[in-house]
Length: 120
Image 1: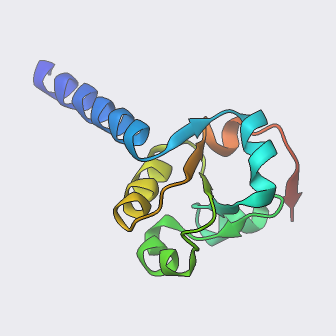
Image 2 (image 1 turned 60 degrees about the horizontal axis):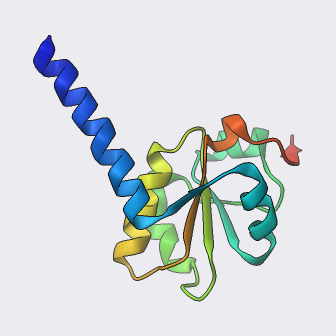
């Protein structure tokens, strides 16, 4: 039991450290300010995206992100979000390894978003 708990804490710590290295995790206000000059990417699956998403976002489900990421421009900031932040950190890591520099993640994901949404 202790080993499982230690492993879970280790995974969370690794994810947190990875997120800080490859992207900047930003609050709602900073996300809103920069999103108009960025590529806003919703990493949730298509059905969730169709139900509601941040106005102006493009859907690139994480399950297919390796394919979709080639359509992103390296000369523009990339703003990532999903329900939380775990998948955003993984996607940010892929972008960072591909040479992207300006990568931002919405802190708390769509769950904490207080801006405009496009709903079905």
